[in-house]
Image (cartoon, rainbow over all chains, first blue to last red; front, side, top):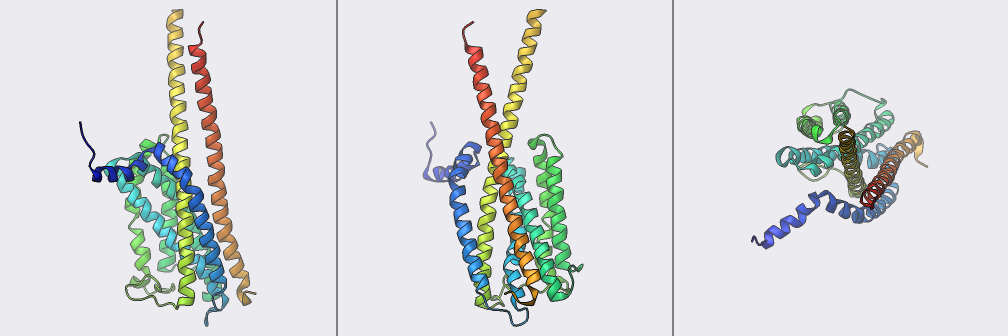
Length: 264
Length: 56
């Protein structure tokens, strides 16, 4: 008889969420709490943002930074989570890793779209243009196209199990765009300004703008994790429904075969 | 209130919150629909199992 050591119990405690049934129980308990935290952080972030002073160059237009930058960060963070899930699919072939990947893709696409849309609305008054084929903007647009491509690829297969490996491989291939986006402002001297927060030395932004930005980023992250767990829950339900329908179809088909044999 | 560029600031916030709200609403409605469908399927299976087990 095997006995579980303390390490094995701890590992299995974390890995137990990889079981769809246990995950659903965790999700049903976690979603209300995480949703509440997300809303509170968002309200705090909005309060701090709207009480931040005008920027000496941009005036009130700096307010757009507090929704544009978090959306852009989440666009990249979501893809990174998808890439980690893709590794889980390919290396461990775990169905929950595929569930995580498929669930995150639409969320990442929405955050990327919001980053582009708010960026355009910020760019027009500041740069005098809605769009430029600048390195940062073009690479984020490519990221949006990659997201849409992955969503389309995952829907091209009838069975999720068939789609898992191709989607995971394409996700990992597309991950090259993330460092390109991050370092585009350093590698190419184009329109978009360089990093002000995520630098190796200290942030080049005063505290009165930095703190509201960080709180809004935390709010967006909380929103993402809440929606991600909710979407994963929906995906698990969809697979359960598919499985039950398949079993029912098999049962009906074997009943029909038996009836046919009786008549013969 | 937001200076001369209010026409850009307000739509930026509206687009962001509308986008996130629509996304959340879609996810919540999908969850309700699938839970309802799953409950219907499970009820149908229980009823068909009861019919099979009923003495003839």
